[in-house]
Amino acid sequence: MVLVIFSGYLFSATSLYSHSTETLISYHTFISMCLLTFANFIRGIDNGIFSLFLGSGIGNYTARIALPWAIIGPFAVISAINYFLDPRGASQEIQIALSATLLSLMFFFIIIWLSKKISHLENDLRTLALTDEMTGLYNLRAFSILGKQAFSESLRNGTMLSLLYFDLDGLKRINDTQGHQIGSEVIMEFANLLKANFRRNETIARIGGDEFVVLSKNRKIDAAAKRLAEAVNAANKRSNKNYRISYSEGKIIGKAEDFQSLDDLLTQADSLMYENKKNKKFAS
Image (cartoon, rainbow, N blue to C red):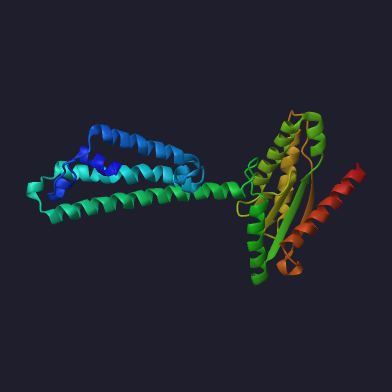
């Protein structure tokens, strides 16, 4: 009712179609109705129908963006038609058709714009869900998705898979003696070395606090592993920091048919990595 009365006061909306626009509501009554409508809206913000506008989800964002256009847009379109089009020079059918066309176009572009916004938000959420926040590498969820795809492809085509499992040595000691900030720097530096020495089409992921994996369809992954070792040594030599990057590695190369599942492949590489870590401790 408030919108109807408001349109009557704002412009002669129904005169577009040769009807009377006389309003029998006084200004005082109209203002009171506006205040009452606003009060009901405020009451519904917390737990009513209008609480939708306060959330942080995609639907809440969409509602906040679309509502003003849905309410103001039709009034703006009709106002523009009434202002620029002389009613005496156009038939009622033409005016109705023009109004319907402009409103349709308005809502069409609103839907297109909102769809793009929602698509961008979904992409951002997907990135957050699949990316390790600290390092920018894939996280465990992403590795599981991509790893299963590669495992299934290997089963179908009989291609080889290479999995490298890395675990940083002495990170707990660094955290205890130099602080967790320094420990985070070690993790990020090692992650950057992984990204620099392995291919873009290889799946590089941080699957735990100090655990990383590289899954590749290239069976000749030893060259990349050697580059990584050389890069780590070079970084340790030129670094003036109070820590050295050290890691233990487990490597598995084979066809998917040789393993029960991706988890089995991961478990075997993990076992080899811990075996190498034990040997390093025993040697030291």
